[in-house]
Length: 228
Image (cartoon, rainbow, N blue to C red):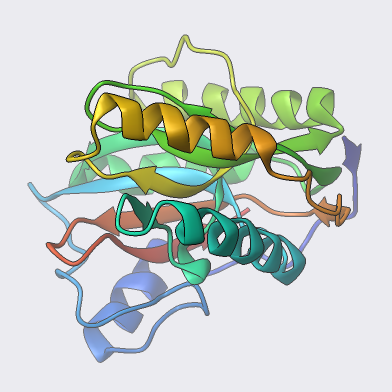
């Protein structure tokens, strides 16, 4: 992980709130239709910290999914290309009064950085009722873990619970539908193992994004709230 010169400060929570109220997405990462109001007081919002992948990674995900869908049509729920992300830290539901302290702590703790990353071999997390197909992430993993550790310090400083699990860098590209039977899951896992590794498509991560998510019957929606 290389530190780089300080970036221009990004939108504050006040600006994000104003943009949401005006119906103007604060960034290209704001996708989908209307969202619940971002607001204060006693509202809680579902948040995570992530790195947004480059277009080449989205194309690699689409290629892998096309192959899998030919063999397992209807058993996978693909992640839409615009929603792909590398999760640094899932925060869960965060009370409204903690939003500004969280942003301030992250802005202080997360330095402007350059972390070289690349795509790795595909894999699958199992589960009797679920599971996820992913592309591995390689490159400067030590730098990535150091960046995640700085973000974790800020999260804890803002009063949120500590995350004790180690970061496993990956890009989730699809989820296994719950109705898939055991033999179908095993077949999917075998197909994932047989996928050719994608082109590494190296890129340099230069920012961490604080993302709000909200769940809908048709799938999740995300909005970038702040960048560091």
